[in-house]
Length: 301
View 1: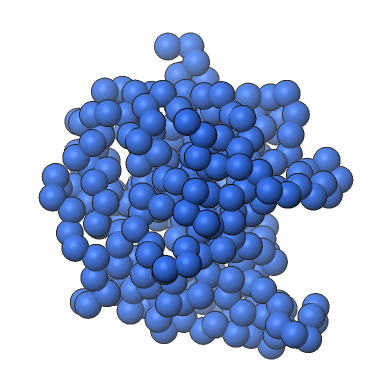
View 2: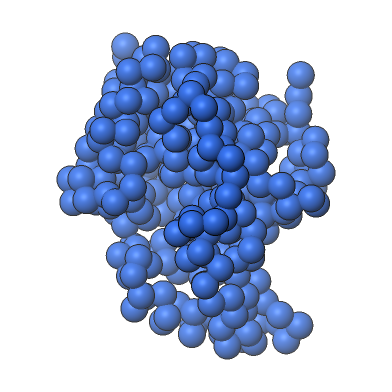
């Protein structure tokens, strides 16, 4: 059964900017370069947007048709009308894009929340993906998920403290380039975030810009981060999964990944030296090489 449908398409150069409607009324912004290469769906982390993964995708050359999209409430995608950010909604986003674009067993790459979204999507519909590469997927290692909460949640609290508006994109870029953790991002990634992760006000280009992912929505995403059942259902993931983390991470390190791998039917764990939780955004080329190698190994297995 298909869960998503394409509602509009705009072509810029050779890249199609597509609008996809989900069954629960969210409209997703999707970027598809097209072509005959095998499809790969790349899913971003909380607070970002699909285009921050474009430098990594570009570093893969023409080996894959790398499709990105903005998850609900991020970038140019709408939030759910009821502001319910249960993470199964991100899985719905993934499956809606797969269906609307008619993708047949694509590969998947997911960073943080994006990795969890891919695992939840594959659990909901085993066999959707040919292989997954999940960089520090946010999966709470318990069969009993926690209740959603913003109380005593440092990530939600941090999101609520974020500065929402800047006088211009130039000011936003200068601000983030000098502030952790954004100061560790690859320059192309940071430029993509400022370009596509902010929206202009009534003044238009050159005027003030504001976060596309509103801080209240980002806080709600974090509040629901440990409330999904991906861990309990990892045994239902039918495809091979590569689990990767940075050696310098302060989030989901190797111990977490090994716990996940023990439940996955086909998996392996990689540690990326010198990288942190934002690894795919810190060093896109290193992640591109690792992703290409992982998918090649999967294809030859």
